[in-house]
Amino acid sequence: MTEVSTGLAAVRHRVEAAAERAGRHSQAITLVAVSKGQPPASVKAAYDDGQRDFGESRAQELLGKAPQLPDDIRWHFVGSLQRNKAAKLRGTVCMLHSLDSEELGVAWLKGPGKAPPALLEINLGGEEHKAGVEPAVSEETAEQLISLGVDLRGVMTVPPLGKDPRACFEDLIELSQRLQARWPQLREVSAGMSDDFEVAIEAGATMVRIGRAIFGPRKEGLRDGNLA
Image (cartoon, rainbow, N blue to C red):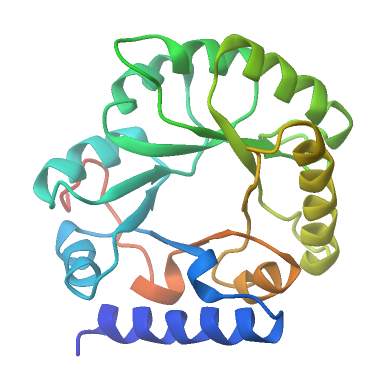
């Protein structure tokens, strides 16, 4: 087995165990393998082991990497997206995890065909340097985006550094449930990364975004799908 295969198998086992502890089915949880900073060969190794959902957080890297890999990969964009890059990504990704403003929603809708679905990014810690809307305005922002025509499917967060991730994820689930009471289609909860995904699953996450635990450290110099 390759290093990637070993990492992926271990993460899958941990996802299943966390789901079992929470009385959930692991099939209800989407494992997004975050391949930022990884060469196409590492992505292909995970693909060959049955992984189909992959995440990237840099538009240039995703657009350079995707053409080198099988076209049935489901690409998720999980990083902050500049409005001027939205149109370039629309035809490649299956979901945008980081929609955080009406302005970005407008940009996401521009272009031919139907825009892929999106998640509303929530800044639970009120961190000034971090993207996402504050919980207090999440319902208002969701209403604006849905009114625009965005296919909103749920919420996403990155826990504040130094804070208990379990409390953070539980707050996100509570917020998600409030939004679902008004818009039942907002059922996806993208939360949890390499250090805390099991806690996120136990809290109720439906998607986890895992990079290092699968692929190991990022490869320096990767920007457009090739190692510089």
